[in-house]
Image (cartoon, rainbow, N blue to C red):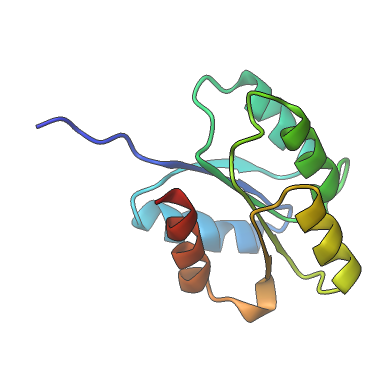
Length: 128
């Protein structure tokens, strides 16, 4: 029987505690996980990555390059633009939500409003 390829999720998050929680949750759920601690690293990894992520979980407030800048770069690049991006952030201002969606995010989740299990559910919906 042919082995189905694991789906890959990239987590872009500068808070190591939050990153650990999601990495553990996703790996336990059978995903391959790529980690990036800031936007700059995420973009570099995607440019060098031979097999791209199937979905990106992206924080907004990060050093060097924030999540909205990363999102813009992803959506401007033909190789990446069809990868669903879920913004996972503590920012709950209407302006940020609108800006993120306008830039092409698939979803906007506020960290404190969703458990990792609920986020996993969202991820699975986008990967169907």
